[in-house]
Length: 317
Image (cartoon, rainbow, N blue to C red):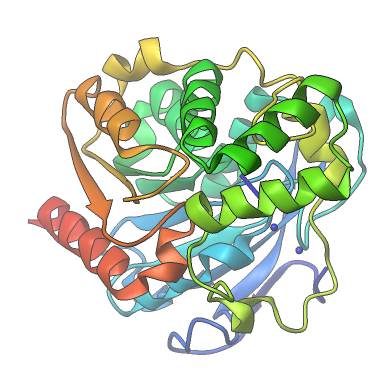
């Protein structure tokens, strides 16, 4: 779960047709939400009114839309909306912990949908964004056409159990280094950080360097570490924040819309767990992206987007 200020206020038309994923949106602006203003971008304008828009929800907490920019390539057939959560990316940064609740972040999605006058949407959530997408789908079923849960956080206890198993499978020296520093709480130790990077090289992004640099170029915004630590904690392996007891797995049976659960073969959101989440959803299917980890969209973009297109076309029939 990891990852950015912009230029204009309001609702600005920038181009008539979708551009390359790392270029300008057709529409960009800010939306008033509880706690401040969030920034969004939209491509695929000509499809509005004929097909439901995708609202793409980034991870973190504290990340930004930039790691999910390849979704803009779907704007040749679908309206695609990316946005930054409050205190993240280009959005306002009041940095008030009272805003940092699942319920308020879910309210952002609904505020964005209403601002853009979208009757039906497809929510797409990656990692922490998957938690928000699932919660939104459960609480706003009438607004949904479909749901895509990408390497989702559904249950913190299950996430931590998966992390523990994956740490156990590392080489003994790396495993023991992580275990020792987690127990001691020495998360800033260079030795721990090296071991953490070894874990990420296996289960976050397996390519060196990780693809997607073009989406981050020119950005001056950094990952909101304070938000991440407040809601999650100091480490992927150790949750001490407000999400430490988060668990919507028992409510997935209430998710009515057709759902795609997608993750990487070597994902920290383990395929076995993603299959288990999918089995709890009445109308759901699973896609495991080969040779990819948590950043499957960046590592195997063509395969990932082909699976998403196939799912979307099935819903359009």
